[in-house]
Length: 154
Image (cartoon, rainbow, N blue to C red; front, side, top):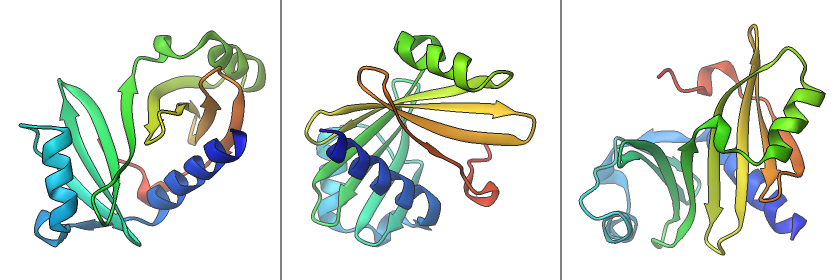
């Protein structure tokens, strides 16, 4: 189980760090059709590609969401922004204990194709910023430090 979560987190990290923006016209038809089927009536704000993995960013019922698809249109992962207060207590306890003085600034719930849940908690202190990944029970998995030029400018 931990291996699956670690692999999913690694795939996500690799996609995040080296993904390239692409126009929707460059996205394979199988991917855009799968997106339309899974999220009817929703329009992607942005598409990114890393190797044969495509990521769509969009708002779903006013909630920032992103999904990844394989080139053949298979839904791989859905990441939904959540309130930091919605994180499991074990996550907030871990952050308080291990990152004193850091602010818990953003949180996401990640669900892979098998239904495995992972939580991402973004912590900041001054210019220092990192993402902490946790399993569904709030057990720490790993830390990801994002390069400044890949971070969203929202």
